Amino acid sequence: MARSRVEAARAALAECHLCAHHCGVNRLAGERGLCHAGVETRVFMAQVEVSDELELIPTFAIALSGCDLRCSFCITGAESWNPQAGEPLDAVALAAKAQAALDEGARTVMILGGEPTVHLPSVLEIVAELPDDAKLVWKTNAHGSAQARELLDGLFDVWLADYKFGNDACALRLARVPNYTRIVQENLLWADEHSELIVRHLVMPGHVDCCWAQVARWLAENLPGIKANLRSGFWPGWRSARHGELRRTVAIAESESAGRIARECRLNLVR
Amino acid sequence: MNTTPLPKSPLITEVLLLPDGRILVHNLTPLFAALLSDLNPADEQIQPRAARIAGGQNEARKTDTTK
Image (cartoon, rainbow over all chains, first blue to last red; front, side, top):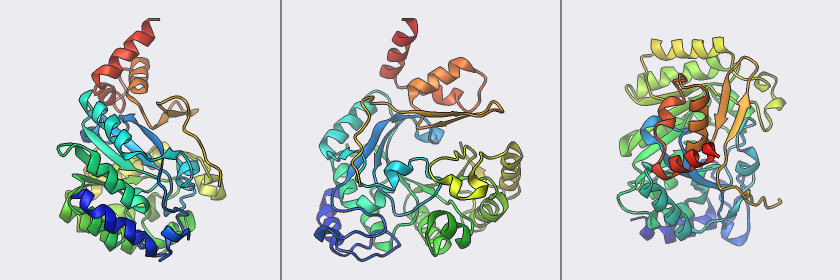
């Protein structure tokens, strides 16, 4: 199924609408949109990891350079903001490494970024090379377009999706993304209908009430029982210092408060 | 934009040690999970992750720690 979609995905780069920015640039002709990605896909990390959800690990994680968001606190900012980082993607070689990891006990293969949506043609090429019975995880910022969702439909067993900001003002200020709430909610509802979904939220210092509380309430009302992973390991790296409240880690009291909110909303927390 | 080559080491983990004793880890590999678990076997976050080390990499860790 993935192989049959590669050509259509590649052609879509001629007027790119893969993410919800809808830049409409011709990447095939060298134009660049907000993600700065062109035709080439590069990989900045491919290794077995155990830092994700327990039900997914060990996972063979393939991280593609470039992203359509500009989160100041991005833990992989040097690679996520630069699609030229890393090495050129070799789908066959990556699939061979993934197979070796699966043979050694990895439970899943995870494709992430940056944001892998901006490299959908290459993602489809990787998936086409992976064994049919491999459990595949799509790690995303949930800012993809309807076109991207259509190309992804049925390919991944699990959508592991970030819900980073609880309101549009924080999203615009910290990640330069407009209309965030509507778009991420649209993606989460779709993902829940089309695959297994796990929603992640990274607690940010000073953003428990404005962001996490809003996210928790929306999940409780619209995706009751959905698996949610509340992560408290905020790392004040990359360009966090541009924002006063992001110059520190999350206080223990904030982590506890976030946990209380999750319990009050009766969220199905996983770790 | 400059091209950033992949580091020579095939495995990458980043660690941030906080003054209050917390340890933040990014891109936790099986080998590093095992190391952290050895340092603090009671850590509820790390223990189940260290227990899921793929066989081959676990063997590599044993070799390293006995040198």
